[in-house]
Amino acid sequence: CFQAEDGIRDDLVTGVQTCALPILQRCDGCGLHRHPPRVSCAACGAAGWTWVPTAMRGEVWSWTVTHRVTDPAFAEEGTFAIVVVELVEGVRVVANTIGIPHADLRIGLPVRIVLDQRSESAALIDAVPA
Image 1 (cartoon, rainbow, N blue to C red):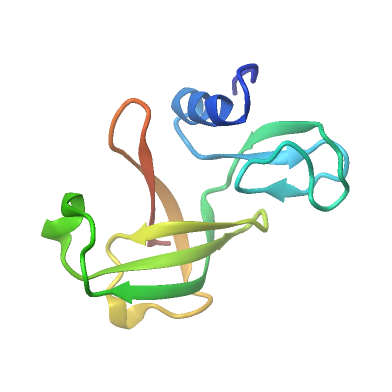
Image 2: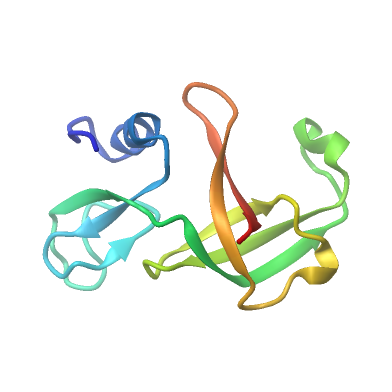
């Protein structure tokens, strides 16, 4: 959905802004998806990649409930849960939970990924009920 040209970090930000959804690197050598972005594939060593949109679906792989707010920006939110989501593409991302009661969290829980656009260049990854 866009032409990459500025480097890994800038390409990731531009791709998310242009495509309006999270994107992943797919290795041109072996086809493996990867996150976070890297200059070469850990599986086959190839240096080429293509940015591709993610299906934005996955399952909870792990989670933790945080009872102590350490960043004033999140003080109003109080207790919150952070999950590691294994996307259908096979990569794992860390996400905040929205609309999922802490008591309902479990390994394998189906979730969707949404972006919480905080500014023109910053978005948080959120996991919501599938």
